[in-house]
Amino acid sequence: MVNRVLREKMVDLEATELAVREMGQRIGGELLERIMNCQTAIPRIDVKCGAGHLARFKGWRKKRIVTVVGTVKLERGYYYCGKCAEGVMPEDTAIDVQGTSFSPGVRRMMGLVGAKEAFDEGRRDLEELSGVKVSTKALERASEAMGADIESIGQLECELAMKDKLDWLKPEEQINRMYIAIDGTGVPVVPAETRGRKGKQPDGRSKTREAKLGCVFTQTGYDKDGRPIRDPHSTTYVGAIEETENFGRRIYAEAVRRGIRDAKEMIVIGDAAPWIWTVAAKHFPDAIQIVDLYHALEHLSEAGKAAYGTLNPKSAQWIAAHREELKKGDIEAVIRSLKRLRPSDSQAKKIIRKAIGYFTKNRDRMRYDEFRKRGLFVGSGVVEAGCKTVMGRRLKQSGMRWTVRGANSIIALRCCQMSGRWEDYWERRLGNNQNN
Image (tube, rainbow, N blue to C red; front, side, top):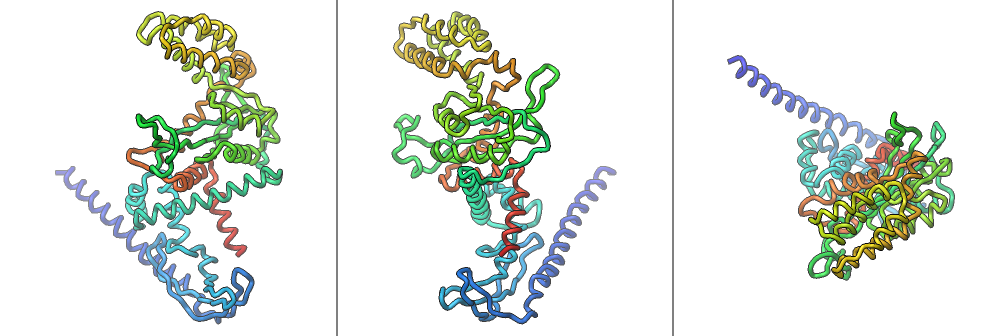
């Protein structure tokens, strides 16, 4: 009996909470509408259009705007420039609603949920948590528009960095080591985006495009066992589906912004993908280059299984015998062992030749014992985790297919949020509107 009464009270409390929220939003909406329209009593004068011409006041125009306290009606001045043959509405620019029917507050919430979950799920969560109702398509468009805006800022930073004009963060303490970790992951795209591209499908086609991801983080200390520790909250991300040359400028700009010029040491970590070392050689020529140890171990394991067979005990024995050589960075010993293998299968021979080339080409990036003695990271776990959290959780869900433009917008949005730059982005928007 007592439990039943308590449950009824809890249900009543929930209903009351929602009713009070709805009431508060209604009252807040009425107040906000009055505040927004108080300028209608001010005499209007002519203004200048974007081209600097005189635009004459023609009257008032109404607009419905979805805000965090409900939909309000805005009445603002409409001006017309005869030379440009275009209308001008300076109030729209001033309050950041030009070309949209959503307030900055609502768009901010749309950007948060749109970056974290599928658009339809985000729409439902937005309504459940805030009472704001938007369509799935509106949420998609707003999220991608914000991502595109963030991407434009990123491109400007790239240009400034390449001209040595980009301001960088001034750390409170000397940066001992700055790491640039790079990786790539496939993002499912619509068929039009893979037309003419070779892939891994049985028919030779591809269903994905590679999204390149880079992260920058710093290291100043070690744990009690002497292992390196990543500085808390020091990891920032950049990424996109783009060519290597463009990505190189992108990760370089982020490293510059983070203060790489003040770092005592710089380290580039990645798997053995050639494009990663192309980026490192061009933009970070003085950096220590390290091939992720776990990728190297996978190549060693693959060679052993190819030589003896996956289920053959000799395979496990061979791999175990040479793992320590690899971990110590004795790559010459690993290469000699690979060359002594004599598989009869042509495919196995191909895999072993590939492994020999892999270790030969990257031997100087695999001096793991030396790297550990210097207290360096030898794994690319940070960026691999980033591929899962930045890309995978949002862009690789079941049934998703992206355009490159749409995917890059969401990648930019997620990188901004996960790099702690979300507030900076909105402050920058506020500053731009005030300047206008």
